[in-house]
Length: 632
Image 1 (spheres, rainbow, N blue to C red):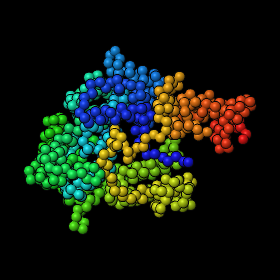
Image 2: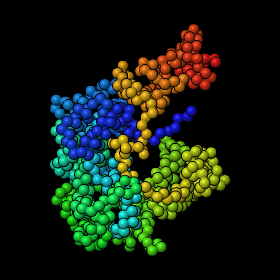
Image 3: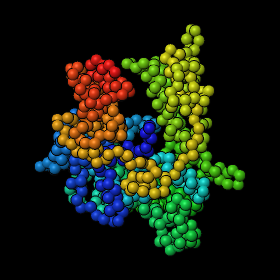
Image 4: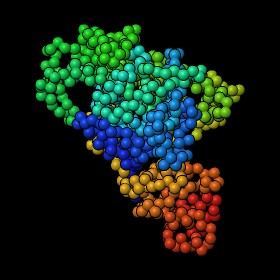
C-alpha cells in the first residue's frame, strides 16, 4: 500500500530528528506563563541543539557563502559530529570568552540605485547564532504580538497583506500612516536591546554576554579596513531578524495598548468567533465614545503601517508614534518618507504592493497592484535575463539562461499573485519581454521563438498548460514560462491558534512522524565511529524518508545493529557522503550487495528469499558498486 505524504514543515521535522521539539515546546509554555530563564547555555550547547543547528544551516541557501575566514558549511560537514560539538563549545567557553571573528561587509544593490550593507559572519559564528536562535525563538514567540508578521515561523507577507486588506475593506480604516525608520538595522541601541531581552525573561548572564559580543563583532570593510560598531545589528546574521523583532515588539504592544488591548475594552464581554478568536466589538464600541485615537498596526520587520479611522486620529497618531520611537527606542523617523495616505484617494505602498480602496456596489473594495518601483525593477530584471537567453553568459548555455529566466518568473508570480490586478501588471511585463525575444531571436529563415517544443513536466502542465502565451526556443525546445499568465489568489490570513511550539498549534500544518521515533533517536545519538557530520545527519533523513524500512526488502528496522548505511557509489571510486549517494538497508542485504564469492551469494540469497522486484533493486545497487548482477 503506497504511503500517503504527510504535511510537513522542514524546521519542525528537523527538530523531531534531533529530539528537540518537546524541549522547545516546554520553553514556549513556560514563557507564556511568565517564567524566567536564568540558565539556557547548557541547552544551547547541548549535542542535539548544535547538530540541529548544523542541519538547519546546511539546508539554507546561504550555507555556501563564506565569511572572512573563507570557510563554508562543507568545512564543518566533513568533521565528525563529536568534533563539531566540541569546537562549538570551545568557541563559546574558551579561556578568553566568546570572541566572534570579523564580519564580512558586502554591499547589495537596491532597485533605487543605492546599496544595502550586509554583514556576513564566519561559518562557526553562524553556527553559534543558530544554536542561540533555536532556543531563544520559542521564548520570544510567546511574547511577540500577533500584529507582527516578518521573519517569524509560519508567518509571511501574504498574512500581512491579508490583514491590510481586512482593515481597509472590512473595518473601513482608510487613513493609513506609512512609517519609515532611518537606517533601522544600523541604529538599534545595544543597551536598550539587552534590556528588552532581559524583560523577555532571558536572564542567563552568560548568554547575555555572548549576545553583546555578537553585536560588537568587528566589521571588515571591502577595502580591508575594520569598523567597530557601537550600535546596530548587521543584516545578514542569522540572529539579526529575531533581535529586530525583539526591538520593535515593544512598539507593537504599545500601539495595541492604545486601542486593541486598552483596559476599557476588557471591561466589556468578549465573545468568541467560530475559529476561536476574540470578538471585542462591544469593547470597541465603548472605546469610540472616549475620544481616544483608534489605531491598528501591521508590521513586517522594520516596515509597518498604522491604520486609523479619521484624518485627525492619523495626524495625532503619527506625532505620538514618532515621539515614542525617538524617546523609547532611540530611533529616528524619516519625515520625507513618512506620510498619511487616504486610501480612498491615493495608493498606499506596503511590501512591494500599492493598494487603494474603490467604491463598488455601495461598498468600498480593495484594489491592489505591484508598486511602480517594484514593477520597474522586475521589468528590468526580466528584460535583462531575456537578453541573456539570446546571448548566454560565458560558461552557460541557452538552456541554463532559460531556466534562470523561468525561476525569476515563478518567483514574481508566487510573491505578487495576491495583488488583485496582478494579471494586468504581469501582462505589461510579458509585452516588454516578448518584444526583446521576438526581435532578437530572428534569423534568416524566420524566428526561433516557437509555439511548440518539448513535453511539459507535470508542474509545468498544471501551471502553464492552458496558456496560449507560452513559447519555446527552437533548437533547445525549452519552454519560456509566460509571466503574463498569472491569476490573482485571495491572500489567506494567519490562522488563529497556529503555532510552531505547541502540539495543538501544529496540527493543521505538520504531521507527527509515523515511524519508530525511538529507534531514529538512537540512530541519531549513535557514536560516529569516524564518519563525518554530513554522513551522520543524512542517515537520519534517510531513516525518515524510507519510513524506517529497508530500501531493498521493505522490512521494518527493529534494532540499531541491523541498520547499515550503504554508499551507492563506493567511496573508493569517488562516491561521497551526500544524501543522494546513501541508502539504508539490512545487514545481510548489505553483505549480499558486496558479495563476490558464489557460495556467499547463495547463502545470503537463500536466507533473504528476495522476490523479483527486490532482486531488481539489489542488482541496481550491485551495478552502481561495479559488481555483476545476480541472476534471479
